[in-house]
Image (cartoon, rainbow, N blue to C red; front, side, top):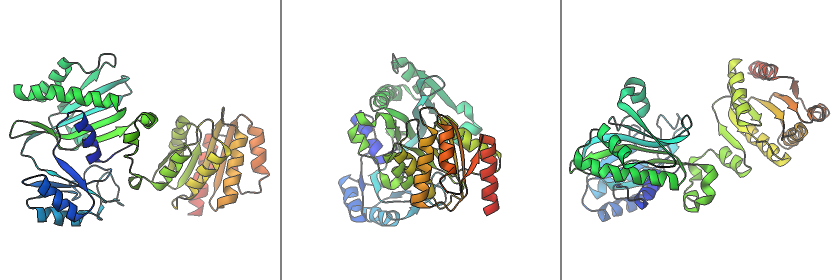
Length: 389
């Protein structure tokens, strides 16, 4: 789960991590009023959407008077902000963060993430802050360094000092950086984060370290332990189909292709998307119905796929272990009857109750193309979609 920048900063404050004074607002009058409450300017007005690159898209601007804060809020609230992370369709801005500007001397990059390669939390940092970290990694990877953290010990003070010295901080700033890093790590673990990114962490001209932007992602499976964080979820920032899928415990991610995929198992779902691309098609989604899906869940999964106007064909690829092929077949039939299938549909079933599942599909009266393997299934759906184009 993702949250907005202003929400991330609220959590950081709770752990005594220095962030600028600011407040989120939903209209221009409140923006002007809060600028006055925050004290003497200048101020930064920042559009709040779940995407990076807001500054390049016109979503982060400097204001020198309260009236200018109001004007910028008027311009931003309601605008469609397009960044490299939103795609060309952009996202609608519904709130802005007004906060005190600071005198920046130097910018740094800082993040904590779960590293599956080491099965540890890794601290990643760079003195090249304020830039796209992907660009730094591609062009000057030597500017990025990593520190793996033993989960039994946690982030040790000597590791925090080592990172601070590698960033090139002076002695006074190292004394600030050590508790800052250790508090962030404590927050990362206690709040069940999967990613924390601060870009930039800045050194002000007054000699203070300050986190002026923050991105937090959380492990969905741990949200039951964090009701306050769970309530921070902004459904307006998510794909409606992904929201609907989450109500039925379906793992669904919308993509840009035109071949819908209904698969059980994340690995098989990835392989299905790969083989569709191998034969010249483009998957429209990742959808894993799970190992113990019910007829209702399968039916809803089918409806979600068909609700995507880009979908011109559907591939159902099921290997029945815990999930039985006849359950999938019944779900496909029920969904097809309720929604109506007007696009090519290819079904590959294998595993538990496969004969029963194929029999149900054959006797359904629906226009379903059967396939005996992944290769045949991918070839058939790609050819069918291309022929219908």
